Length: 385
Image 1 (spheres, rainbow, N blue to C red):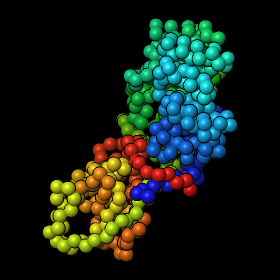
Image 2 (image 1 turned 90 degrees about the vertical axis):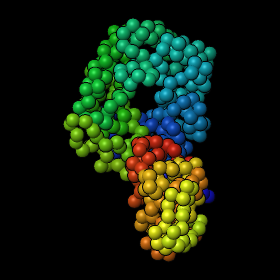
Image 3 (image 1 turned 135 degrees about the horizontal axis):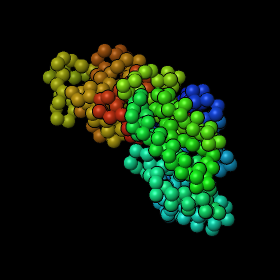
Image 4 (image 1 turned 45 degrees about the vertical axis):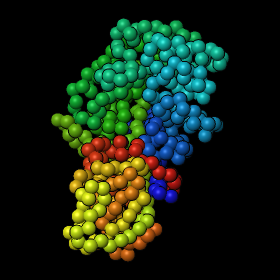
């Protein structure tokens, strides 16, 4: 096995409960497991979250939702298909008991046809575009037409109304206030059109951690006789983005979380090189003195980024609890690290690529990206523990 991912089931469940504790009993927590649970293995994580009490899970598309449903056919957990839908997806949505996010009249019509053909009405969540500029219907005439279609349907029921914040990690962000105002206007339109949603949701991990939006979410839902929902993904796996903006403060959620994933490999070779020896493509590294090096069977094809190379990101791995710096360029399938200061390193020894001592945030810093990107890019086998 080139490398493997160990998932802590206990930490995953504890993180879910931490989100529940911060949001309060009146808020429904929807753990997001799209993108294969942010690289953590949806098939590994979904059963753990259900056992921990999750009544909802958020998936990417029909295929992901269908796979989760087929793996747990008797689970009553609801699956929200978050990332839009193609009209051709409608029959599969109904067949697998998935809950689609819709925002156009055409979406509603497609779901209506599929539901009628099956003889079973379907619930949907309506997304409002408030500033993200991706999916969703804008308040005004377009929303009025979609609401009219929903209100008149005998087969499609609007169970939830949602939007998505674009700057929720920025404390006091003006755009967040603007998005809330637009969302409130859309909710007024929906109520006027005769819709009575059970769930109102716009909060993600950063919104929960930043805290400033949570009271608004709860109060708004309560005023409509609905229940507030939050869609937390990153937090479930033990991470939060740093709180930014003009009103920076410590996050209320981040201190309660623990990373769930540990990515490991094994040493496949150990050698000593003399001063003047070169290592890796381009001979970018030249040994200044005698060194001991370990060879690892992972590289950028496995998600260990080339940016971790020495002279670029200057990344490291952990061996026997100590840092082993990357030497030379990270290759497609191989990486060399310096073990000169670590005793008794031998072939077959475990190496932590990402975990205790080397975090997803470390990898993101080397690569000039965010930890989400790092976690979703790992290619390895999964082990639950």
